Image 1 (spheres, rainbow, N blue to C red):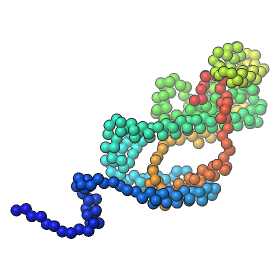
Image 2: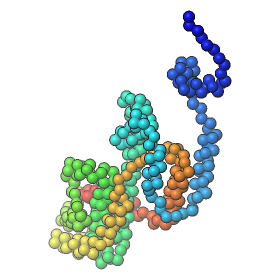
Image 3: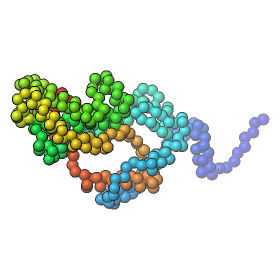
Image 4: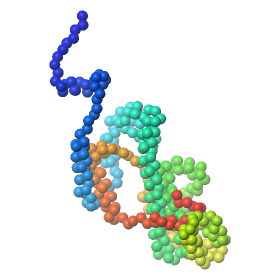
Length: 328
């Protein structure tokens, strides 16, 4: 005959047992996780106050180092293989795969990450081309440019646009994908800055050669923009009566500006030709003293750059008159 043994338990013992026997507990109770918002709020307020106190306390730029890699490793190393998901555009750790089963769940969750990455890529693309225009404007203001033919002022923007494309191809697509895109689009690929400069001269000879012959059919823009471009053409063509004059002027300009152009290209590659990644750590990124320290170092570094950096120039006219070599 079956027997049943009874006994007494403290409430805390029962709560601990239900925590271990989740399947049984779920049959009798609807469980909810409750978070004390005051505790969370106080923690975030403390972080914000620390940041505010350190704003203006500047130091040298502190880039991501092996220290950051160790923090990331510590955060994900204990995640079991069953809770590691690689979606190509993002790697997720700790989330159960069941959360992403079905097209609607996948689109709803991974789609948001895709949108974030696309927004970051678009913002970076715009910033890199703005940087190229800024450096081109600096070259046009240099002493070397004062002695170059007027038409040579078209070279820096076109040349650094090629460099910007090269940087973005590696940063956003990787060298393999960039090569595939180049082959599919028949875009010119240049191994050296000498080759890029030669390509720019050919582009400008083709475009300005049409203007020299009175052909403005491919000039883009309307209204005041078109009027401004006609004025630029008139200035650029001063003293040029033939295609030979045009080629000679561009050659002289390229020779005078070459050093500045190549220095600008090297500076852009040093800053921008790095493969980009976005790592979202959530609030766990500041869950340790070391993580909080690294975040505060970044805040100081950005503040230092704000105080020491010159504003990026070239947000308006980019030097292009037609659609031959679109910087974007």
